[in-house]
Amino acid sequence: MTALEVEGIVKRFGDVTALDGLSFEAGAGEFFCLLGPSAAGKTTALRAIAGLERLDAGRVRFGGRDVTDDPVQGRGFAMIFQTFALYPHLTAFENLAYPLREEKRPADEVARRVDEIAEMLRISHALGRKPNTLSGGEQQRVAIGRALIRRPGLLLLDEPLTNLDAKLRHDTRAEFKRLHRELGMTMVYATPDQLEALTMAERLAVLRDGRIVQTGTPEELYATPGDSFVATMVGAPPMNLIPGEISRNGSGPVLSLPFAELDAGRWRGAATATEPVLFGIRPHDIAPVNGERRGPGFSATVHLTEPLGDVTVIDLQASDSLVKMVLPEHEALAYRVGDKVDVEISMEDTHLFFRETGVLIPSVERPDQ
Image (cartoon, rainbow, N blue to C red):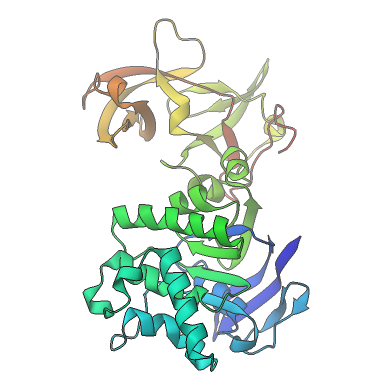
């Protein structure tokens, strides 16, 4: 069942169009992510949904009710910002209690609900302390608690992990997922970090220049990106995009890359394509030849190695192109900068895009494209 409906919203700041007909839906109890680079419109979208920005066009509905013109306080939403925005002169208890006191709730109810939310967020030990004596993680949990204590129908999260260190980001991601499971609340989470989006979202929408480019589950967007922009936004390391040209010989279309030629017959429309293309291949689909090469491939030189713990990203120099390959750590130990390596590529999950527009050229073997 749909909870949040955002329909064609437009927001301009002078000559700048921050949101250009933005539309998406989030289901009841869904953890939905807005993924996009800086200045894509993520924060403006959340502020527009919350009622903090007046729209130039479009509608916002929640639970079937049009809330476009409702005041902020009347929507029943809560929002967590990049900064914790805690009141420095108040204790953690008073920061949590503040929204309820504004609603003139009885003192016993305030105390009970603060204790409940503090126990849920594991900050009961910190209730008597002021923000400047709390760790970053504790401050973040107080900010989360202050947003949740009113029991909102919709929680909006604007890059809430930006100011946390790597370990705290990991821990707080897990905390949000736990809260989502326990509360069953609809959450819309905006982030430029595709790792956050892919690990937390049930569905996500990729934003570019104030518009939704593609919406789907993390698995769908990873496997079938609709254009080259989505292909680079979803997946780490990002997909290799290699410039190429389509030519023809007696047996069909050929994809000419700077360092190899590949059969292009797997892509519908390649036979008649006349404009330059981009060949997309995930770093995980490139591997050193072990014995006899079983498929298409190329020779390259190791340009850089980036150990990431259990895996290593290896940058390969092939002609004038840099191509990333990912190997398990124990396999990558065999390669050093300057080594020559013969690699093969798995064509099954490769993609082809028009270079100018980024539009996907569908695969014959993928009827869902």
